[in-house]
Image (cartoon, rainbow, N blue to C red):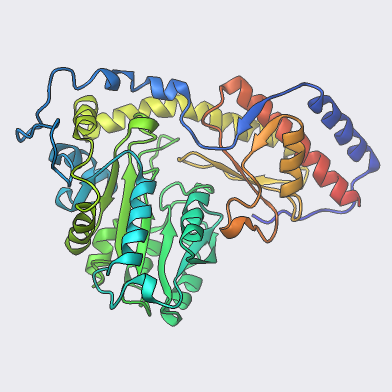
Length: 422
């Protein structure tokens, strides 16, 4: 997706870009495209959830959800999401509202406890590193930085992380304990992992016997087209390749029902599930089963999830189409930008000429359009090319989004043409 600068632009283009920017800055905009939050209209789709479970307080097996216990979560909710997350229901945990919290806890428990297959705690080892496909998810990187875990960038391809690089690094360095993956409609590129990539991740030899794939399947049901992408079953592939404990699978309902009252999931091998439950038993006497029960009543079954996500898609698709349409109109043929057209997920990745992303973001902010900081898509906030900008179209209304993307395009033209003419 490299964007090459063409020869010096005519002075007229630079002057026009400056006038367009002056007009934009004078409009007094206040627009925000920083995070991929569901819009109020999306949350409204789950309003009925808030009136549940009504007078009911027992699960299908007679458990009183008002009381303590049930650390693994309600069986009927795990059944609903087992197929979607490609994890047998008996190996799936239903927890609180944040899958990020589960990822955090898995890191903490690996640092302070001993993973199945490990010889010692991670905290007792001289150096711990994770592979980080880039562009990637800033909150994954923040977790590593929080715990002093070294981050090693790995380029993303159209099929997932560059597997030749991944295989070489994990085979030669026993300090590499994991890799972050958003396998379907990746944040922020929208790439979905190919079957070959999944198979290679499952089968590759690793110098660390306790290597883990943190499989953040956040967008498992978040399709934008009429042809949903399907990815291979990593957990089954790992078991088939003789590495049953390799995969940690995460998911949640946060961008399905209510982001502030969702349910998060963890799936893995029986040994890993026992390991996590043993640690969780010391920090909790059970999850919010009332919330889990109301999700069961609201969604009903896997088909109910799919039907609900169709309603979500009807709200999101026009926004993503607007982003592509405006970028093509305003920047197509300029040589100043390329962008992704995702088939699902929550983000569009915009690439501008090398050395321009931070300045584009700064100019946009001065004009009242707040974007995710340039560099957030890379470990330590450092995009070595300074070229990647993440666009989050979900939250603003369509009219506000269109204004923001038009304004962003003005900033790209200004910074790009000035750099070209310098």
